[in-house]
Length: 262
Ligand code: FES
Image 1 (spheres, helix red, strand yellow):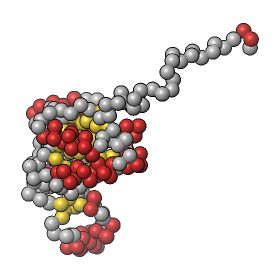
Image 2: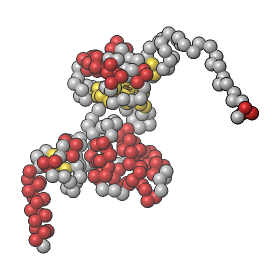
Image 3: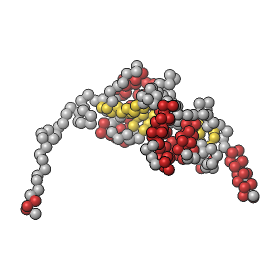
Image 4: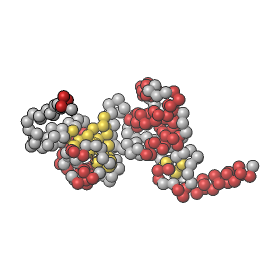
């Protein structure tokens, strides 16, 4: 009885200490304020409230069933990433806490299990993004090849700060770490939410220059589809600019081993 009273009192103290516009992401089952970071909290706003109703569309519900069918029935929770991804596509590129709660309900886990995933992976956005989410690779090879200049150009051209959405809701610029095509550094990727979850695409633009990224943005604004891959006309995919300088002939086959000599 005494333990229960103490626990109740602790909960009261904890909620009194919690800043008023914030609610704990874990629906009350969570960490103490002194050890929390921004990631442990969800900032309530008119379009992102914990008590909002969020549901998958009818068409996406079919996809949900299909995704879950890939896992054993007692491991439904393994579907958390594809389901969050689908929810994000349906919601125009970001995940309100109510969508995370809907996913938790479907896979039958505590909401905190879903928040843990959504806050860990940077491809899940927990605030509004533009219809075109431009992500500049900030890791060393791209940085050495001018990614800072690429980002500055994009921010200046769009008149926004990093992660801020343009007034028309079309664009925002963020940073990602290595996206695995360092041989074509610097590169950006564009998550395209303009056609909802049906037409969602995630496109790499490589060997970009400040001039080229502005052209890409303007093409997207006009509803065009810039060609993906290397933007350097002298390169074919990740081959050397201007063609090969070595290995020009047919490679010699490896010498056959004389098995009889062994
Ligand atoms: S460092 Fe940019 S893709 Fe690897």
